[in-house]
Length: 215
Ligand code: SF4
Image 1 (cartoon, rainbow, N blue to C red):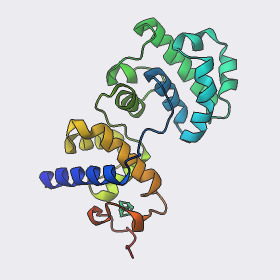
Image 2: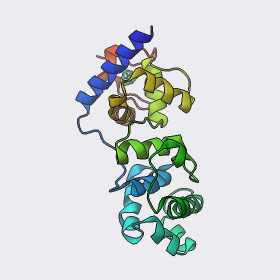
Image 3: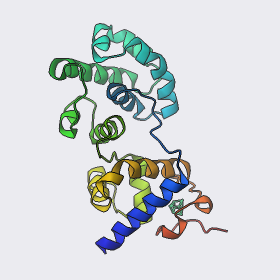
Image 4: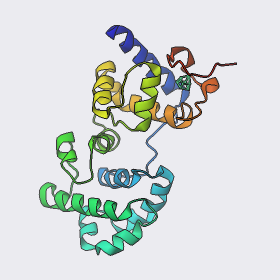
């Protein structure tokens, strides 16, 4: 049973990688600090909106110290088009304070250190590790919950359990790519409400009873 799931997970990632060679992290960033801030801003917000805001935000505040030098009300104004901008401004400032005081302005490279930062959970931590530092990690977002459930790879909605299950199913070298292509598949094909099953590259592997029959 376990071996079958391992095989299924490998097939899924292989086929999705072929189907979406362009798949990538859609938040714009040029270093780990920028991705940390962008990921905090992205909660309950689209990546497109976040990218619009961070284009000027990162020019104005290129490092943790520059956020700390600014007035918090001004930062709130700079990100006011993002949902929960007040809380997020507070979270970003809290992170910046710790990064400056404890890590010399750098972003730490372990999940334990990252989740100790304010407003940073395992998903954010793993996204930063995987995409900005190339450290194997699986960040479980809504797509990484829905798609593997439909495929029969995992069951349940607990993000920590899904992260562990996917890490067990895939070899470490496929964690980062697997995470990206599964998210991409969930965003563009295996959508929450109306999955585009007729266009699905892994249709034959999908065990979801409600999948829509291909023509
Ligand atoms: S067949 Fe449909 S439900 Fe199954 S993975 Fe593909 S898009 Fe998702």
